[in-house]
View 1 (cartoon, rainbow, N blue to C red):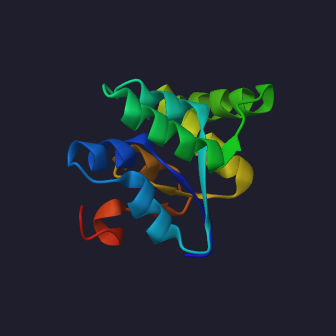
View 2 (spheres, rainbow, N blue to C red; view 1 turned 120 degrees about the horizontal axis):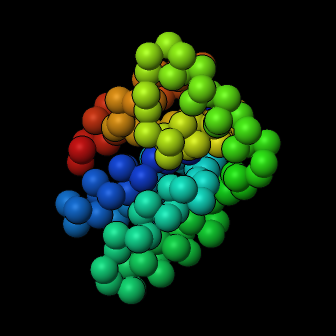
Length: 135
């Protein structure tokens, strides 16, 4: 993989629930590419971790990923996207719209098992079931 990929929280959470190490799996998978994150993904993942040692490990991993800051520009674009989708009769969770907007900002693909991302035709979506044997 040589692209930049923003990893959705459901990928981290699924690996962790199965007792798998997302740091190793994602690091091996991305190869010479880059992994990205944003504050929303980090919060969704870390808030559910019960063991501090694991939270620190995942937090340290987030620290070395490309971080897309949620600037006013990002919020304005996410709001515009939510409004346009709503006018088309599509209501998506705000956090997914924000994550998609962050990926767009840096020209990244998204790795997610969440069907909501299929609504973003301009994003390349990688499905974990197709990318990981462990899925």
